[in-house]
Length: 105
Image (cartoon, rainbow, N blue to C red; front, side):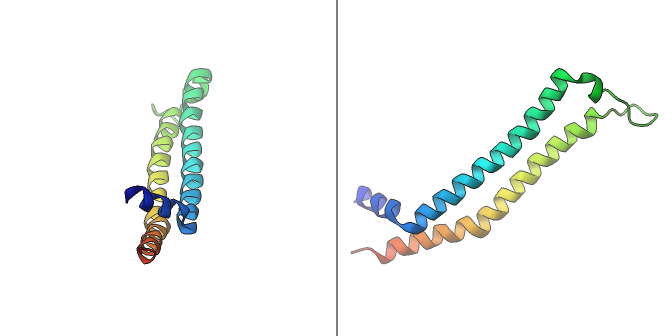
C-alpha cells in the first residue's frame, strides 16, 4: 500500500513541479550562501590588509562590517526561503495531497 501511494505521488505532475522548483531554489540559495561565506574566508586568507583597513579614526576595520554582512546575508537568505516555502511550496504540497486523495480507489 505504501509503495503504491509513493508511486502515485511520484507520478503526480504537481509533485514533479514542486520538486523541480524546490530543488532549483534550494541550490540557488546554497550557492549564494557559499559565495558569501567562502568569499569572506578567502578575503581573510589572501587579503588581510584589505580587511585590516581602519574606518575613520576609530578601531573599526573593514573586516567587521563585512563579517557582519555575511551574518545578515545568512539571516536574509533563511528568511527568504521560509517566506517562499510558506507561500509557494506549501500550496503546491497541499495540491499534491489533494490530488493523491482524489485518486484513491
